[in-house]
Length: 63
Image 1 (cartoon, rainbow, N blue to C red):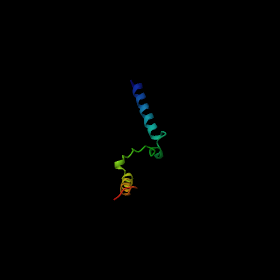
Image 2 (cartoon, helix red, strand yellow):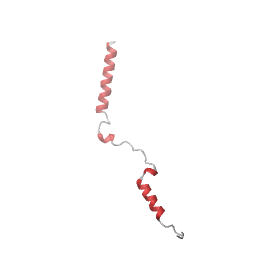
Image 3 (cartoon, rainbow, N blue to C red):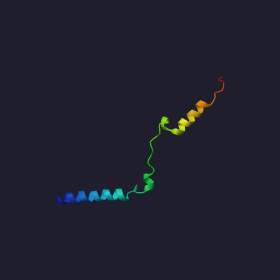
Image 4 (cartoon, rainbow, N blue to C red):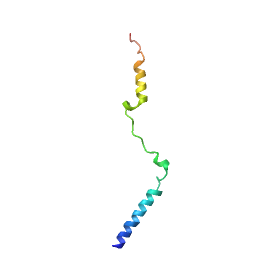
């Protein structure tokens, strides 16, 4: 029984050490996570361009 507890304890220490000092322990690696895409109706740049396109007179239109 003591060997099973020792194995579980050793495994726990190994996992904690891996998380602390593993390959993704640097801040640069954590910053590479993907951002979720922005829906067009939530993107202010898209809405601005859409508004500009709607205000432009189209060729052939008589206002």
